[in-house]
Each structure stands twice: as C-alpha cells, then as structure tokens.
Amino acid sequence: MRSRSYLRLHCVLLLAGIAALAGAFLVGRATAWKWLPHEGVRCNATGANPTLDVYFSPGGNCTDAIVRELGAAKAVVLVQAYSFTSARIARALLDAHRRGVRVDVILDKRQRSEKYSSADFLNHAGIPTMIDTRHAIAHNKVIVIDGAVVITGSFNFTDAAEERNAENLLVVRDRAIAEKYIANWNEHAAHSERYESR
Image 1: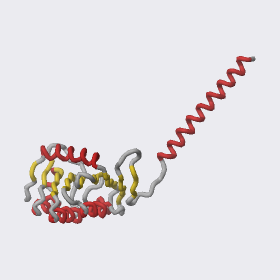
Image 2 (image 1 turned 90 degrees about the vertical axis):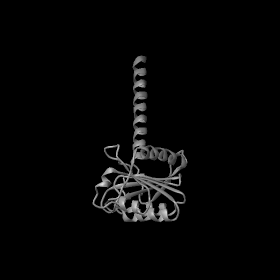
Image 3 (image 1 turned 120 degrees about the horizontal axis):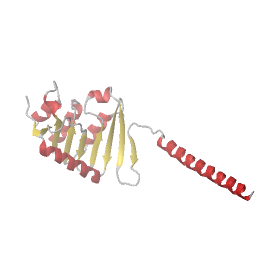
C-alpha cells in the first residue's frame, strides 16, 4: 500500500516537472516570437554597449538612413559593396570626400562588367576604388564610419533594394564592433586590385 502511494507521489512530481519545463519552453518561444515595429527602431543590445537602428525594405527608408550617416562622417568612411548602383549613396560618398573625409571603397568584381555602376562615378571623383577578385562573390554590404558606426545587413546599395526587394539594414554604433569590421576591410583591401575606369 505504501509503495503505491510513493509511486503516485513520484508520478505527480514527474508530471509537475514536465509541465514546468513545457511552460518555460512556451514562455521562451512566446518571447522569441514577439513582434517589434521595424522602421527605424532603435534599441540597446542586451548586456552590451552598442545601439542599433534597424530598418527593413521595401519602403523602410534604408537609403535615407545610409545617406544621413554618411552626411555626419567626419574622418574616414570604408565601404564594401556587392552591388552598388544607388546614385544617392554615391553622391553622399562624394559629398563626404569633398568635405575632406577619407573614403575608400571595395567592390565585387561584377562591378567591372556592369552596364552602369558607381565604380566609374567614384573613381572619376578621385575616391580610391578597388575590386575584390579573390572570392567567387564579394558579398559584403558594409560601411564603417569614423571607426564608430557600422552599417550592414542584406541591403545592397541599389534602388531595387530600397523599392522592390525584401532587405534589412542595421546601423550599429559601437567602436569595438567597428574595429572588427575595419580589420576585415583591411584584409580584403590587401588582396584587392585598383579599379580602372573604362
């Protein structure tokens, strides 16, 4: 008799434990699924120093965010771009260059054969422009500003990315993270070739 009551007690405790674990899992899943508004949301990364501005396209003002950050550049802008045909972003880089900001650009090799790309525009403007030929695709979409701000995400620097594609863009404000992107930019610059305008 006594052994049956112990068995029942163990069964109840086991079921209670399973229920607690399932509840914790569901709470965790509910948190993971929480919806956040997305246009220009600013949030602090948990337990770290960075602040993040988050954008999504189409229609999420990604290009505006990039142009605004470039407009605030004071010393150095480093760019890595896969596809780059946005006249507004190219113009913002040129404006920064004319203000005395050092601007250096690394592009994917397909920019050599594009019917129109910003490579010619930037190169003619005196902005050092390189082609990363080592990789099958130099798929980075990165801008580092003044060693403190990193712009990255899936967002290509094109009108299509702004107006028609489903893309994401992060503006990260953190010097430690920027240092990592600068180191990676330097690695790619070391094996890239100077772009020659056609």
